[in-house]
Image 1 (cartoon, rainbow, N blue to C red):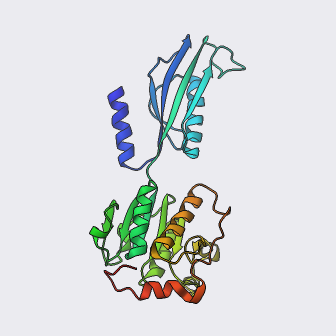
Image 2: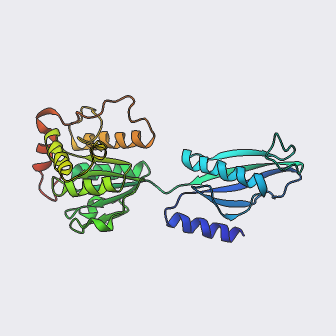
Image 3: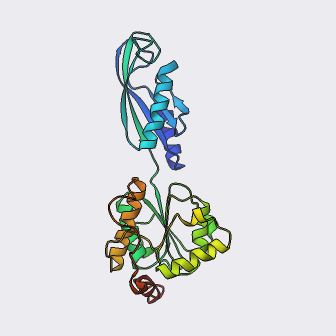
Amino acid sequence: MSAEIYAKAAALAADRSPFAMATVVRVEGSSSARRGAKAIIDAQGKLLLGWVGGGCAESTVRNEARRCIRDEAPLLITLDMTEEVLGVGMPCGGKMDVYIEPVLPKPELLIAGHGRITETLCALGSLLGFRVTVDDPGADPAAFPQAARVLSQDFDLKHVPVDAQTYIVIATQHKNDHLWLRKALEGNAAYVALVASHHRARLVLDYLAAEGIAAEKLDQVRAPAGFDLGAVTPEEIALSIMSQIVAVRRGSDSKGVKQIGLMDKADAADRLITQCEPGDSQ
């Protein structure tokens, strides 16, 4: 069974499907499961493979596995099977400890664009545990050594999946940024940011509103991108954006640092972006 369990785990990981591995680590007294028994549970609490005890023991493990995946944290639980009322409803006379570990795919950082800001974003994203994809016709793979993928299909967006685990930064130097925004919003991305001045961002958002994108969707766009850290250089701007991504991911986006205002003064972002030709550093 162990080989089958690990093969299933490998297949789920390759498919980027979240799951939890439950392992019986201690048994005291009478128990239907032995130490070392394992089970794989998906994000909906469904038992996919394995066995760590029947009846309410299994139900308890499945419920805790769901919580473990949701909270992105491992858990050690004790199942008391000595009393039906106080325990888990299986008075077979024993106890067991079950260690539940979430196995989660890396969140996806999708960077649309090229230049020094995106190069720094790629490096920071990889360092912070994101799977980084860069997509831009002008992107040089050599400039993004930390990226899992560097794509340059000339804005053929069909090949780039977007879901609730995708964090998108659009720094296209104003080339088709409205198409990227539409795709990000339609895919319900976890985070959508546009590297642009207030003026440019307003033009793009107004255009999408006229195209029928709902106002509540457009409100999700971080434009200008990043926290107001007083950033000036491309590297500092990338840091402010990555800080905001981490805050969104960890649920503390509204705390601490002020959002927006990163590039208020004299449309600094437009000047920074448009003065760079493809292949140059921003």
